[in-house]
Length: 331
Image (cartoon, rainbow, N blue to C red; front, side, top):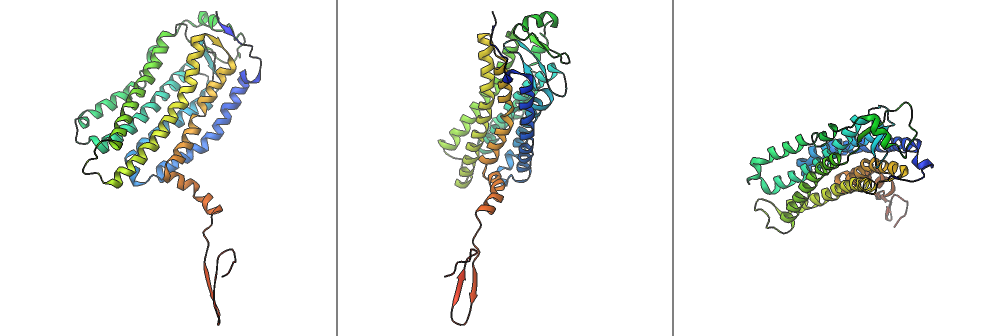
């Protein structure tokens, strides 16, 4: 029996979801532009090996944000695997597939960054160099395939809608309701595999990088300065990457809990997608402030405004030499 809460408040309304997500579009778009600029023009030579990979990750993050907050604006009716879109394009089936796929692509992009660090520093002369291209290519080929099985099990919509709308009797006449499934097994396993595989890869690669940088004897061709710089870069990328994973995991685990307990609260459903929508904004801010070159670029104008360097001038007369700073004091 479906347990329904009384959702007659603004938080549960389509109007709240539309307003919140469109507001996030206005906030996140300038930050994403700043992120693109920092990666393209402020990445130093020491980070050149991960520049393209950081750009790839940022593209995925931007794409996910714009899908959720502008094109799709998904109004989900969990615990039923159903919902409709409030965005500028009314195609809930397409956008559901794209959102899940881009989340997986984002996770895989993080894996590529840590694999690149591991390969450049520790595995260029190992057996891994002979197989890495095949493994990484396979990982990216699988990204659009993980969620395809769920697309082949979409039920007959009229019967499925009656089951799904116990707690949502009123729907906007101008929107199409999609019921993805009345059986959660196929979608659940698709999502578990799609997110589980990159999670395992990421943890293995971070563990290898951490081991070689901290405990293992450094390679003879690596200077202490190089090792120090790579440690800083690895830890910065670790914070950036795991913050992104956390921003995904909280809303997704809420959905899992709601479906497992078969509990409906439209306010919670709306807040799930508000939570997903802040992913890009927060991850971009973390990227900008966790990497010193980007932080220096962003904070440069602020530092020049509030922390002016004193200007020393020298004035001489017949009897003495006077030294004065920019604020006019004299000694």
